[in-house]
Image (cartoon, rainbow, N blue to C red; front, side):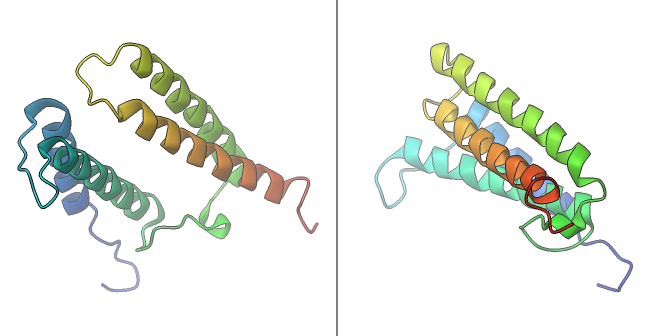
Length: 136
């Protein structure tokens, strides 16, 4: 990879999307070493979400890695506010999926609320770092 060339994100997005579609709709699985097809399906879903996150990171920041450091953000205040709104959206979605699961697997609300809470923690960290707790 040269200096100006962005890392490949298509492969991660494609594989992650296939695993998520399999987890939600197709439900193709095997029992695995833990003798549970549903657990294997959940592992496929978590791996799919991780691959989609990696592809998002590579697409957004044009570099390899996993942690979106504060100095990588172009406009941290605006992005943190958008992320906070997205976090609340994930938490509300998790609540409604907990009431009526539709065709999603049983632990979906738990995973969505975890993602929403992690997004909320990060956005609050950014807002505090550039605001009240900044060195300036």
